[in-house]
Length: 219
Image (cartoon, rainbow, N blue to C red):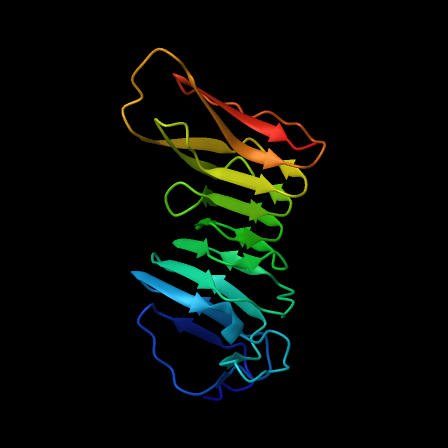
């Protein structure tokens, strides 16, 4: 499929089926994971640098976005630079592989999974590690006051964890805690929810009874 020379947009729904190669052509083209429901996508199928390899099925796309209310899971590996990063605008995007070379921007959608991302900047998005309780690893993390860090905790002491290899700027973001279990007893539960290697020890503050959540700076 040859899309032409304009600024084209290709939107895949979770039930997509495409045989052959889709070429975005020239222009500033957008590749979108969209639709409703749940889907899985191998990021190695996308060529972002105009040098299509044998496994590439979507070539000459300059931008990559997650839109729509559905949930997509990214698998696979890529050697492409993704210079414009990946934008998460709606729905949920789960990472299931190591994509530390790709930066992510959130402007309304949710980023989760147990994989690895590059730098993450959120302006009104949601960071929610794991698929249930799990660990998401990022480069630097920048949130704003409209963003939410969503953490699931249980009554065995397990919790979601965000491992940040870089600076952390919480920016007044909100913390949303999802409980699993009955949390009976008198002792408080202590959870590590952000593990950070940088020297910018900004505290996590939250109004949450019967729990103490901490951010630790790795030595």
